[in-house]
Length: 306
Image (cartoon, rainbow, N blue to C red; front, side):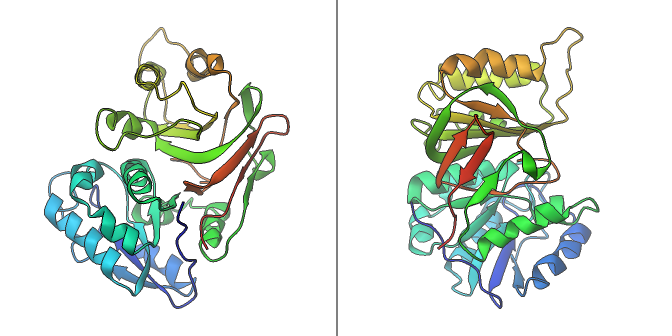
């Protein structure tokens, strides 16, 4: 895997919106967060455009992406928000351009599509973490979530245990080592059958989502299972499944659904990680080695930057 260079004070970060349109006020409110780190912020030329539920047309969103990649002053691309639309530009991204100009790429939710496509096409480590308008601008954006950006300034191993402040639950015991991959469950499922479907063999698969009730999660896990994406995983990390209320009067619980699909795999499975649409939001690099150990309920992740 190829790790991007770490950030230094005085560097410039690029902010673009490859999916849904960010609230302009929230985007503006989030910029000082990075300026206070000693960084300069460059907004994409089309970041304030709106095209229905998209942040501009496919062509303008793609243009912003490519411009930030080739701009040698820009050391990191941090997305304004998720939403919907990233997959629409995946086939037209110049992945050779990214490979020849490796830099930090940070976001989550709909950005899962980009994380998977970029990693598998270029070998570049990317980062699953909170974004400007959708997270940083919120009043409840917390200190721990903010501290996660420190990993961009120095190579550091991330150590996740219950000391983070949230209980972890072991669904299946064991220890696993492998490359950490994954992200938003619904986005991973939507990529199946495309050139960008996730490769999971021998990897630790992280899953999170929002607004998907148990029967919806059941259907998506079943699709991953039937597509062979669960058969050879090394381990499973379950992040936050926010707003997962049951839509049906008679329903299984999320835990029952997870146990049905994941416990028979014979690999370690832990849930309760604050990764996803939640605060605190534990940001993680994707594409690096990780170790999942249920005996002491820990997830150790290798550094994401050089």
